[in-house]
Length: 224
Figure 1 (spheres, rainbow, N blue to C red):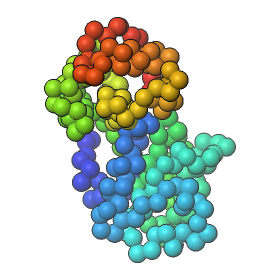
Figure 2 (tube, rainbow, N blue to C red):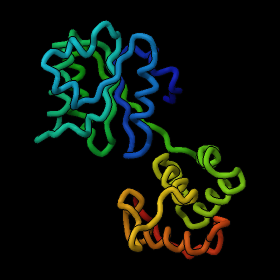
Figure 3 (cartoon, one colour):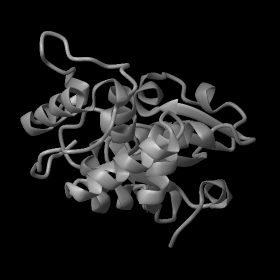
Figure 4 (cartoon, rainbow, N blue to C red):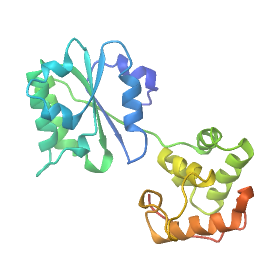
């Protein structure tokens, strides 16, 4: 099943939005919270609230972001704590986001079904394809430069990296000179392994003021 962003608010069952870090879960939920009858809150804030009814107010749907940021000693504990607050708030309809690596589907789904009488619909944010990545980059780069980035990452076997919006933002920041190395090192947010740091350093050294993406050395697969 594929659903567009505008279709999510029409669903009646609880929704769980899953995705890797940087895939845009918070941005999506913030957009959904602008709909009539919706209210945005982080999972941590919900758990800190002595009377969660005050957070819900007259909202018909509570948009709960970042379940993965809630400390939990065992599987399902974070969801159970959120569900307790939702019961106290009158069991409003909800949409919940979580990093996919931190989601415990079996235990979490059963807990939600027990309290809400329906299984939640688990939805995964799809990564950008090459055309979408190019369109995203075009907001900061020229269309030609954006195309060069996408093509070159594909030639290096790193095309999948551009499916993550956070990676694209980092590429934009480096390309536009918004982020620069300090004492020869890149900020941690822009470097997740030595190969990628070297890749970026060589990129800046080779592209110069023109920012041309060419003559890059082959690199192994890296993770962001």
